[in-house]
Image (cartoon, rainbow, N blue to C red):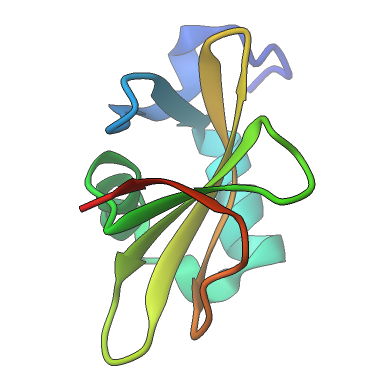
Length: 111
């Protein structure tokens, strides 16, 4: 697998968000998330896709206006959080994890 992220051959998924822009990730980057960053997300690919396409709440990062935090309920007082950056109209997944707290930030969309 090459390092050319513009190649569509290694795109694992691309989903449209409620804000109308798409977010994608590559197979290689997803493997990095689930093996290095957040191993607990290993079998949670569908949950992350659903969180991006059908979140309960969507917030803008307090520290970066191009970073969005997508939250979807995942049990009692638990959420899947998918973090994505939107740059030049295109979005890509930064990370995904389970959390018991929603971070501060401007709410830009709610179910």
